[in-house]
Amino acid sequence: MDVLEHISPPPERTRLWYWFKEHAKSRLALVWLALIAFADTLFSPITAEAFLTALMLAHRDRWRVYLPVAWIFSILGTVAGYWLFYFLYRSFGEALLASWGYTGAFAAAQDIIGAQIFVTLLIASFTPLPDKVFIYAAGILGAPFAPFVAGFAIGRGLRMSVVTYVVWKFGEPVLELMDRYAVWATVAGVALFALYAIVKFNLLPW
Image (cartoon, rainbow, N blue to C red; front, side):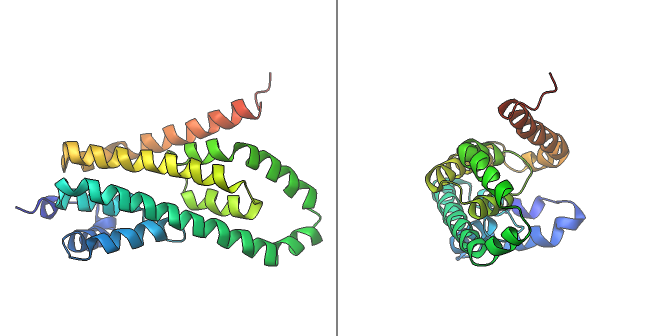
């Protein structure tokens, strides 16, 4: 029995979930996972975890293959996104920012982000904010590359591992829980990121 046939996502995601179901059963499923994971951190609105979930439900015993592929290709997409925006900004944006008189503010932002880039990327993986926002910003600001990649790799690896384990352990019923508590998870993620920023940058009024 195909468990994917019995999952009914909300109507607005039906078409996309149908695509996931069909391609999760194809011989090129691993290739699709690699492409989706790479594009996810570069430009695509589709997260690797979404297709990873479909794959886990279709082939539960292959998590040892799916998880590393999703993780590695998401890192490769992140590296590509970082350098793309690094060179785009220095080719076109630098002169524009200087003409607006924001060079000093940009330098200050570089110092702040650069010093906190590892923790920022680590925490960002558990917020509802798209990873691409942080990846683009890191490239534009020229954040230190090694801690940037390390923070993303650890954070995203943990997130993918949690998704993989939960789907492997509980199967189809967990999707209903994800939908039911998605809003609360979003609030918790934003609160976590805000709390870190408040404490780290001493934003309390007292």
